[in-house]
Image (cartoon, rainbow, N blue to C red; front, side, top):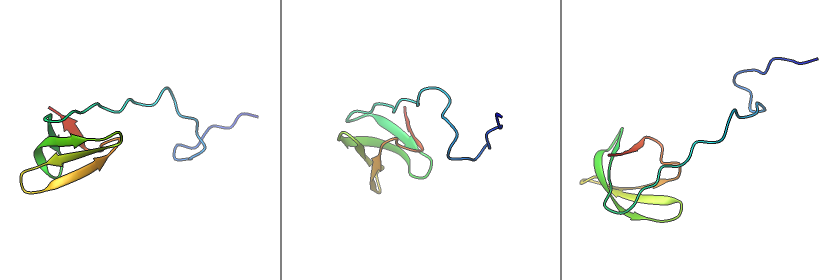
Length: 69
């Protein structure tokens, strides 16, 4: 008997391949929903350091709410 999967169930199988993580490099211009316009200062394998002028913020992959310009 096949049951229909529940929409919010953690046991659902993902549909398709995972989305790729966007690539950033030093000096890239970025924007963030909360901090606004910034520039990437440094990049490691799994984190970015971004200077927004008034604050420097570290972001870990997958860089939620961060968009490359």
